Amino acid sequence: MLTEWLIEYNFKRPHESLKYQTPFDFFFQNKKCYLCTLPVQGTILMENKNLSSEIDKIWEDNKEEFESKLSNWLDALSYGNKFLHSAKKEFHCWGPLKAYVSTTKAKSSSRAVFSLRFFGQEIAHLIVKDKEVFIKIKGNEIKNDKGFDLSLPDGIYSWKGKEGQLVRKHFKELSFATQGIPNMIKQEHRIESKFISEMCKGSGKFGLNSLRIQPVLIANKFPLQIPLPISASTGLPKPGRGHIDILARHKLKNNKTNLSVWELKKPNTYKKVASQAYIYSITLLKVLRHSKRASEWFKLFGFKSRIPDSLVIEAVVAVSRNQEEKFNKELRSLKETSPLQIGDDSIRLVAAYYKEKSDSITLEKDPFLE
View 1 (cartoon, rainbow, N blue to C red):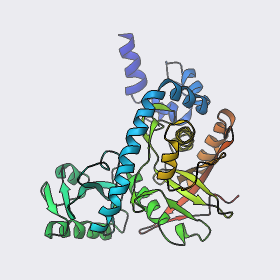
View 2: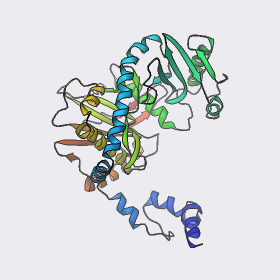
View 3: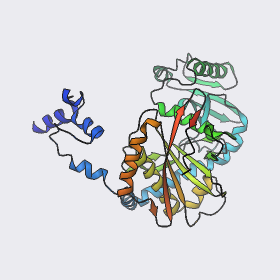
View 4: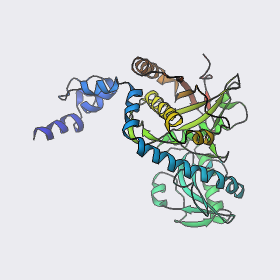
């Protein structure tokens, strides 16, 4: 009975004095709790842990499993990379629709399967087989609940036929009607899609002339979220599938190129994004320094040379300007507990303050300039 009461009191019951939040929710937003009957010191200690050391321990405890996962993902993406080079010639995507690849769809002996997305949200699959392109609609009722309102039953249709034309027309009109900012359940999908589009521009990326950056693409065309065996979704490292929002190559003035890990949040939100960017950057270093097929991963990321003796991984937090104070506070905390220098390698943690427009994303300034 006592346990049930504690759960109800701390995790379920809103309190007027806490602005109608539960003590648990209030604590995580304010780092203090006046009503909470559970001790909070353990949570505070977790937040003050050395994240790099935690990742070291997780990696060591799961080394064989991680190696197997990384190898399977690499096989799928490497095989898909070769096949998708030929498949990409068979169709074109019309904005705002884009084709993505994933580790689960990239590998096939007879066909290429793409995730077709509207501002980053999957709406169908594109299948390329024997130089024919098909669109596969599945779970349409669920997608309609998200506001897409596509009047096309589930099934497989020709991408070049009337059904494919209907899909392209429908989403083009939907983009126009919402002025390029459709209301989506996960707004980060829309932000991510626009960031990728900006990075793919030839010049003037993000409204800047100085930034030379390209997203890592499969077959030099298709975006994907790079999978990692450690998740950072809570702001703490845990074994499990994680993914980098955008992995990019950033060319410096001296013509050296850094890998750039971008973690994005929708406008006016934060949620421990600096810790997430840090965790994924350290985990990426683990892949490149300790996995058996590190050189193959480096090649997949678009590099032709061997892995340098010293790497700089850029951990980029992309948020709106009104989140600056939260970023600076979390950055100070990370610097106190978690190293930015890992042997000869280093993590460079910076913020990119953005504004979303109907057809673009702009940055206030180049985040890599001091």
